[in-house]
Image 1 (cartoon, rainbow, N blue to C red):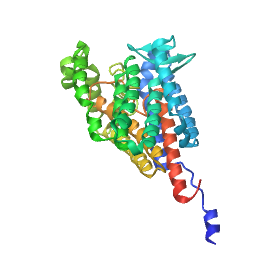
Image 2 (tube, rainbow, N blue to C red):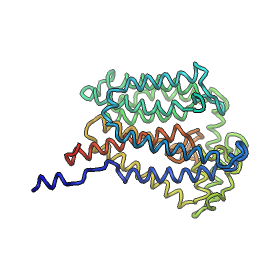
Image 3 (tube, helix red, strand yellow):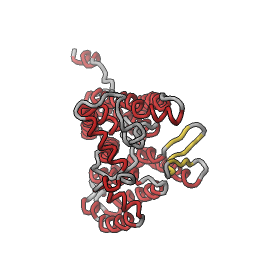
Image 4 (cartoon, rainbow, N blue to C red):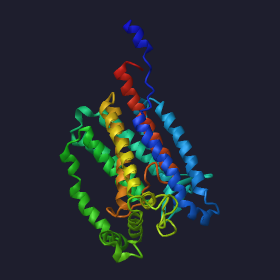
Length: 379
């Protein structure tokens, strides 16, 4: 009787609604807000106010397909691919600098163009690094506290990726890679003393780097007092803060924002959170934060319940990458961090960011499904 009941028990679907709902909700809000933030810009540059809306809707559909596909690829498959993914990431990053496929925009070369399509390799490099670190840390778990086994090889790989990304230059993505690596090394069991030791070298080098160019010094000073540089380095921060101030509690209403009308640069990408603050107000901002909080909560839960160390570390990496990018983007929009060109996951306009974020959630769902299957006896 008990065997019959077990056979008739419904099989788990593996689509964790508590994770999937906030992701899809954010994507839906993103489509609406991308249109609201970009319609005037799109009409001026491309002759159609639906230009960015159509592309973002297409990116969202492709992203959902990527999520579903990655959900059904067993996450253990990636365990055999870390060096393949790393090689691909290095090749793509190198192609930006050393081939004619590199595409420059806004003073940076961060994209590869192949035909009608453009792709940002740093987003793929982030995923490749997560897989590599998860594989390497789980494979070396018995000797992870050895400096030359648990720390040095991982930092060398990070250094190579960082060097190629800084050539673009894309310092925001480089910062994410470093923070992500340190989190995964800490969770993987690397000694804290080893994690702190590079600060002796990094701190003075970082200081020299910051003062080596006048625009960096001005940007740092403008972070503390943006109104002193209202027409230059402080321009973005001031108009972003004005957007939040105008929004108040309830917001001006979708489509009724003022700062997106050629005052706030990149309103549909880097500063879409500011547009949300102006048009949806404090309530809208809190809803967005809660949705991201749900993603973080489920990511941590999946990592804790993962069937093995590799799955747990991949879940930690994916969740941390999303959380770090969200914190940096929101921090910049609220004037809490210096300006960096980073998108807001699931919300900002951008095909590569949305595709890789959705694919990463698919991997996270697969790890969660494997844990659920292990606990219920299903495969």
